[in-house]
Image 1 (cartoon, rainbow, N blue to C red):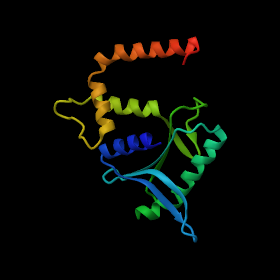
Image 2 (tube, one colour; image 1 turned 180 degrees about the vertical axis):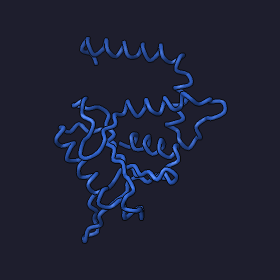
Image 3 (cartoon, one colour; image 1 turned 60 degrees about the vertical axis):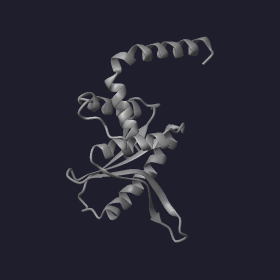
Length: 177
């Protein structure tokens, strides 16, 4: 999950959000916590808060639903207190998942589903509008910067990506992959 969490953190920081990772909430009497929130971002001028829970899991849909419900319920309970935010501040809850067994589902556990491919598409679309010579992504966001270079060199990379896709498909169909 480190990769997904890092990608989310970088993307929101790049957009001007203040981001915290692994926010432990709900201090219990024994010193433990109710749960941790993977990524929480606050954009000061937009007054927007986003809570993203990335997951590579292979759980059943019902177990995923419960997992995200637990995380988002805890966020609803504690984030306003943590942020010192007014009660009417809107918090967006996002479940970032690699793939969905239910392709037409839009929500899970009280949050919006965002597929990894859609997040990458959003990032690439934004980066594709930038002139790399004058708007290179700073080093501190290495994953976003890598996507910027891939976007910049997409015409040269496309044949290689198409070739690797055909090769992996051939391996799968031959029973070797």
